[in-house]
Length: 79
Image 1 (cartoon, rainbow, N blue to C red):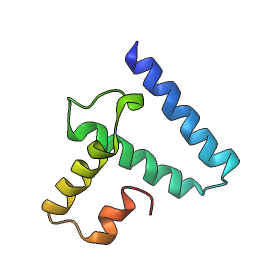
Image 2 (image 1 turned 90 degrees about the vertical axis):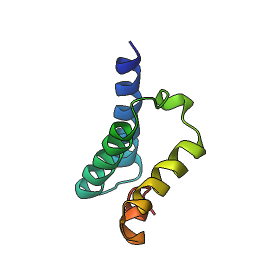
Image 3 (image 1 turned 180 degrees about the horizontal axis):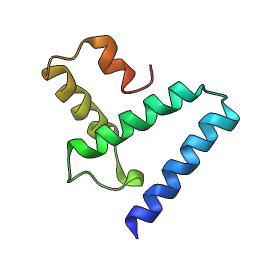
């Protein structure tokens, strides 16, 4: 059930990006990839609605510690 709810949230998020914000297909693909990597990074992450800024910060710090360049880390959060 949580998976279905998460899928609904992500589907709506990407629909909003595409339709309301007009982002490019490549940007959508990059965001999908970034969210999938976030999810795969920690099997103990809470559901989408329970994620906090600290979850994202820890993930980005982990990427930086792995040696990713700052622009690559920024890409993970859409800046």
